[in-house]
Amino acid sequence: MAEFPAKASTRTSSPTREPAPGSRRCAPIWGFVCSSLGALMLLQLVLGLLVWALIADIPYHQYPAYGWVMFVAVFLWLVTIVFFILYLFQLHMKLYMVPWPLVLMIFNVGATVLYIMAFITCSAAFELTSLKGTGLYNQWAAASFFLCLVMIAYGVSSFFSFEAW
Image (cartoon, rainbow, N blue to C red; front, side):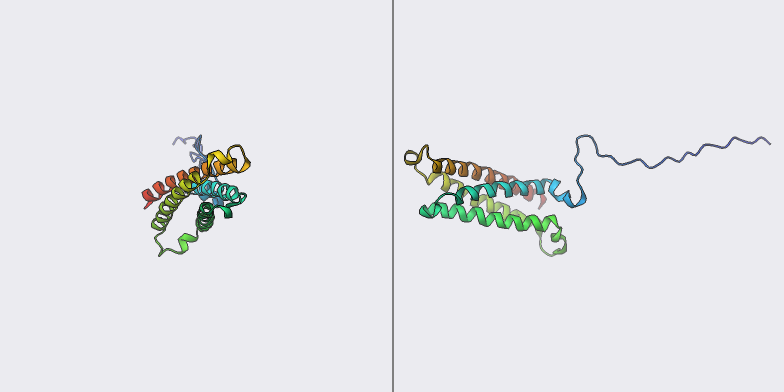
């Protein structure tokens, strides 16, 4: 009887999983931050902080309209921080009886509407002729610009929240 030569092992080692070109890898704790929802929330937090920092540096208590803008900016910034922490630490999974996609959609739509009103208020509240060229004019113009950006960020987040719902 002829003996066959011993076959070389046909077992292959398991392939290493490498990310596809152009994709991002995140550590597990930062997985939420790398998601579109997390990135939008971070953008909302940064832009919202800029808005209320610009308004806070202005003597807004002399202009009643800016009190409203300040309230909207700070209140929504704080609520966004709460949602960000809930999603970052996955606490929304522990509160499973709450319909989180619906809650997030309602919040984002409400925030968009409030930021639209704050943007219109901030843009219309100062007089161009009396303040042009001063530091206050530049701060109010910057605050209006960043209000518009935050409004757009919440609008985009509302769209994605609606799709998730």
